[in-house]
Length: 439
Ligand SMILES: Nc1ncnc2c1ncn2[C@@H]1O[C@H](COP(=O)(O)OP(=O)(O)OP(=O)(O)O)[C@@H](O)[C@H]1O
Ligand SMILES: [Mg+2]
Image 1: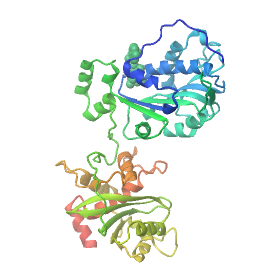
Image 2: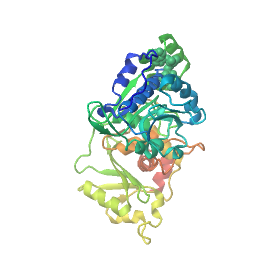
Image 3: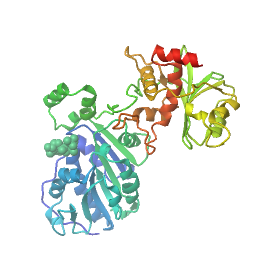
Image 4: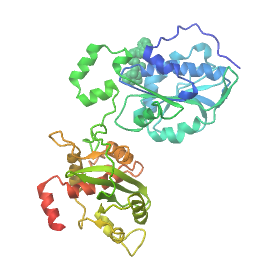
């Protein structure tokens, strides 16, 4: 086992909260760590201590020199600006084999291991080596695909032997950052909560917890910022951010634990899409809707019919579909999706054309929260996980339209939810009159 030369640099002193994150490093129960922290908490500072330890352990544990140690940020420019100088400070000269490579931003250690600063925007160019450790900074702003397609596979081949003689497999990762709405950073944070993934661990700390921002400074920020942005940036709170289409949805306040009762009449909003059909199952109680179940990623209309019948025997079913389903079905050229639904014994409530997207979005937003603060539509978020996720995540494009990017796929469930709401609970009287004439 080779070791790096002993150095006499003073050790960095971590704050108690930084130390909580640090002590779990390289433990099998915390192979993937997520630290969600407010601005100026000291995330990047902690990164220095993490990178230095990774360099030392790679040498001590006999990690192959093919397995590298990386710091990644959303872009190379940002990674270099934020961390390259700090990385050189963190790695003692006595550990370096050669001078740092200023163009590539890499350091080769006497043990043969390579440390690098990388940008995760061009993640396709990063493949090649294995990884012993990766620190991802500003995780909420990095593309999820960089993790899933490149970093995660690179972490899977690394092997080494710890001092007790036990041999272990798999590199380690620490993802740190400030939240940005409910995106992948929220998911990986959840993976690390107690009772979730066995090899993930996560922490959430405010800027104040970090001890680097004085309380007066926080007060000044509070005066200048809107409450939502303040909570996100300084309290590391996951917030619906401004660009979200269904900004009135709130998983805590919109939730219900109600379930569908035997024989209850069902109202199903439905969106047609080959392989990606979506449906939201509502009941109406005391004149108000409850979204209590869902169907997600169903192949086609015949399969949807089969699934509804199997899950809900003995219920009357009214379907509120996308009006474009009146065209011939992709499944059966001679029959439309809507006629298939009617044939199955469902009543189908649909106009000849779809309402405008704006009317549908506005109606759904209004019933989720009106200006009197009333939440008239409640959602069982455990039974409707996909609807919950899509309501939280669908954003507007630069052109101001709800994003229908098939890679994200956040549109279908919301469309399905909206077809029922715009028909039965339209936002304006005017729409109601026109619609009642058409029925
Ligand atoms: N343990 C520590 N000891 C001394 N100074 C520290 C410590 N942790 C952080 N700091 C200092 O606090 C400031 C903020 O730290 P850092 O840049 O690491 O925070 P951050 O959470 O990455 O901030 P941002 O949200 O802006 O990315 C820096 O000046 C840093 O040097
Ligand atoms: Mg930082």
